[in-house]
Amino acid sequence: MNEPNLKVVEQARDEILRLLADKRHEHSLYMTRCKGINATIKDWKDKAKEAGAPRIAFKALLEHIALTDKLDSLTKDMDRLDAEAAEFLIEKLGDFAETPLGEAAVHAAGGEDEHAASEVKVRKPRKPRKTKVAGEGVAGDVLKTFVDDSVDVRPAFLRDTEGPPATA
Image 1 (cartoon, rainbow, N blue to C red):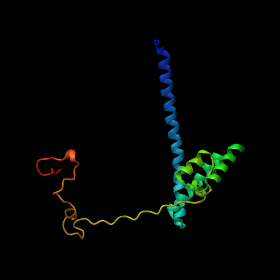
Image 2: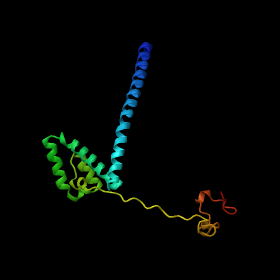
Image 3: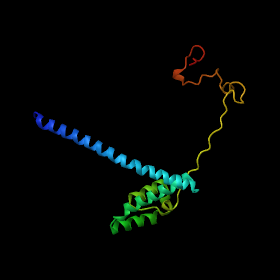
Image 4: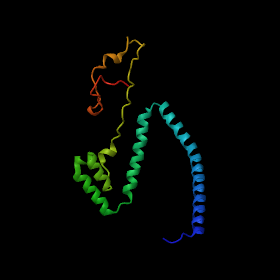
């Protein structure tokens, strides 16, 4: 390997450090501008909730629109042959297109699964579990009824062959 030209290496280092500082500054400006936009978005989401739109359903609607726009942007610049190939795959895959493998094939071909795009899947929120703690309507230590200290549950290679099981 040749002797490095230290002057060029120093110059490259200094220039890259300057550019990284510029990039951090630009990112900071961008985030500052986005802060106001994000606050406005939150306000509109709150207004939609106050108007009766469930927050989760409204969020699903927004995500559906964003995904539809993304799919449209993927397929809008497709040439005629690719569009025909994607349409052919969607048509021939049929119900297979609704499986994860089929969806991946359709996506790889640049097509859109008409069933997936038309349905918005909304998850139901989980109900919080009701747990009782000793002292709140539960007499004694609940765990003692489920724990059998006479059984060594450790894997065989960890068991002590002489004596009772070790307790932690």
